[in-house]
Amino acid sequence: MKIPCYAELLQRTDAPPGSSWGLFGPNNQLGTLNFLTPERAIHAASLVRTGRVFNLDYPINAFVPSVSGTRPAASHHIFSNNPNHRDDWLDSFYLQSTSQVDGLRHIRHPVHGFYGGISDERVDIGVPDLGMQLMAEKGIVGRGVLLDAVRYFAQTGEPLSPWTNRRITVDDLEGIAARARTAIEPGDILLLYTGWSEAWLSATADVRAARKGSPGIGQSHEMLGWLWDHHISVFASDNGGLEAFPVDPNSGFVIPDEPPPPRGPSHNGMLHRQLIALLGMVIGELWKLDELAAACAADGVYEFMLTAKPLNVIGGVGSPPNALAIK
Image 1 (cartoon, helix red, strand yellow):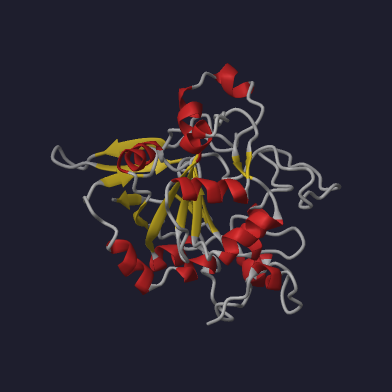
Image 2 (cartoon, one colour):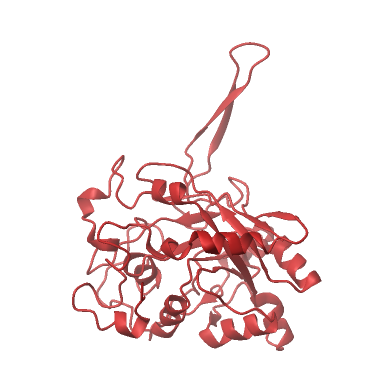
């Protein structure tokens, strides 16, 4: 199957310009997970050299108060039916409150709607369209590549601050990969390490409130084209949105007259709308990458096998990734 390049997607007239709708089949709702083939899983398994396993999930309730400001902490309860038994449950468990995978019903495009043209009415509780159960059934298994922006920018003499807006460009991503002597391959699962989560978790409330932004990928068609043309299956980071914040006001993605939401962050101008709703790209946020980054820097190997198993929630919007890197 020939996959059109991003420039060709922008010329589409049979679907929204810049979208991958229908390319993988009329009823396919997996988006870029279609790039994860059995052959690529086999290749990923061949990358295991030491058998060392890295957990890429922060604990539930690690980010309390929540980064978005709209997700209260989960409450863990334990009960027993008899002295020799224990069982438990969670109340107020927000599936995107800590390390997370964004499902394809997480964001709709303000003009074109949800990925594949799924109607708003189909994005509801218990309705399967674009639900997290599709990712759970497919599974995420492939070649992971760590892009260590922290060490890269330190080496270039421009240390990356977790509290300022640094829009990481395509040239930066290619420079990071080149420094790691790692080529980007089709189907790759990219992990962008910015050091943001460690800084946030160790900071006081005053330091958090005084921040001027956060580093992440910049908003541009060039970035969208680079990710699509490399057939990236998943792009995850350790920051609170993958993208740089605040958004680039000159990107062309900002809708000037769009009113701000009554609560929570605005997505106006974010690539989330193009990545998720148009391209169907799977995004990860707040992944725990510090230990993996240190190990990659120590042995000079930035590729590994990566697995993730989102929760099998029919109609789920997001999920903890349950992600592992195996070196």
